[in-house]
Length: 155
Image (cartoon, rainbow, N blue to C red):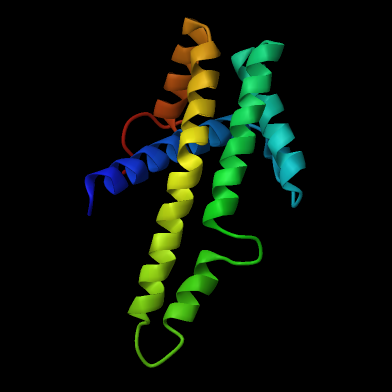
């Protein structure tokens, strides 16, 4: 795999993992944020993370921009009405694995990541850089602890 593709995918995966960890951490103690409406769920998670990190209005706006970029990245990777399961079922629906379609699907995902990743990385950087040192430490600790409060690697 070409170096720039690998770096782009690693950067997007790392950013997504960090943001997913933030969302999991924000929602860990409160199950009320689950909603079919993504905008409502996003607002709830942003509000919870804002309270836990004691964000000011400017930081909260940056976190909201980050959440919006994360949703845009997700929408680019998983278009509305299509699921990864449906895409896989289409690839194995015949008597043999459709390698051509799998390659095209992979190229489409790579292109989506390349297109949206710079904005997502910038949004995360803007948010993280706006945090005070104690807030950054609190976020790092929460990400290290993980979703269920465990420290270190999962068994």
